[in-house]
Image 1: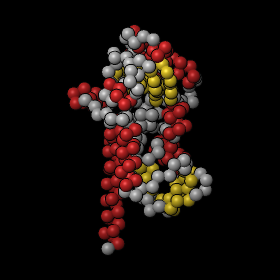
Image 2 (image 1 turned 120 degrees about the horizontal axis):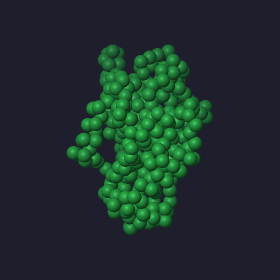
Image 3 (image 1 turned 120 degrees about the vertical axis):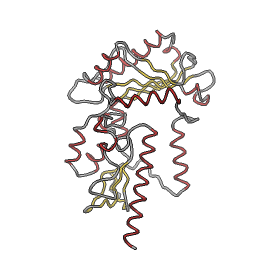
Image 4 (image 1 turned 180 degrees about the horizontal axis):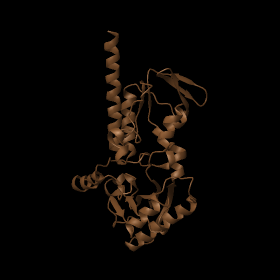
Amino acid sequence: MGQNPYQAPAFLYMLPGAEIYEGALFPKGGMHRIVEKLLEKATSLGVQFHYKSPIEKIILNGTKAEGILLEDGTRIDADLVIANADLPYVYKELLPDKEAADRLKKRKYSCSAIVFHWGLDKVYTQLDHHSVFLNDPYKDGLNKIFKEKSLSDNPSFYIHAPVRSDQSAAPENHDTLSVIVPVAHLDANYDQDWKKLKQTARAGVISRLKEAGLVEIEEHLKFEVCYLPKTWKKTCNVTNGSVFGSLGHTIFQMGYFRPHNQHKKYRNLYFAGGSTHPGNGVPLVLLGAKLTTERILKDAKKQVSTKL
């Protein structure tokens, strides 16, 4: 959730309880299979996708959204617009509503993450599909992230090892590991040296793994890809690089209090994604897309009834 557990709403503790009791689902072929399946279904229904077409703004007229304007000057008219980019980014960059953008800017944001994707020529059987390593003292590590906007030398982290459930995730006798290290989001008020913080995260992870008996990680590392908070901001337009749904899940930024999936003024402008209702994470984002779709169909039905 990208939250400090000492400050987050207590009922969020139901999530790890449910995961431990019921387990978690994992798609064969990796998480990208979800994208591929959705793409396959949408294409079969006649949906067209346009790639590498960045948007300059959403075109508005009165109380309606008329379409979008691409950065290359192309105008695309539409009966309705659904924005699934990070919501604070949409208000700040694609809409003229400065007041709403300023309100969103003042909201509380989740932390970010430094992510390492590793390919190794050795399988470390000590790791299960999901492994969590918590630093000690735990609270001090959280203070580093949420108060000092930095990272502990001994960080907490999570490792995803999909080969344990899906042999296609790596060649035989090889391993694929994704290491997620929670870290502060981007904050201009602090001196954040991300090159140094990346090195701190990497060294901390490898040191902790050695303690757990996973030795010679670096000797067996065949390739590495690393994503930093600034990566999330640059490539995905995620505000502050706050990759856990951007807007934090505080008590007054959840449920009804979270930004709704329909604009108050431009009624044919809808939203989807982790920063709108109901929240972040693949299951909730997919649920949010379903809720937005139901709202669009309901509004369309009302318009037809009005015309009749």
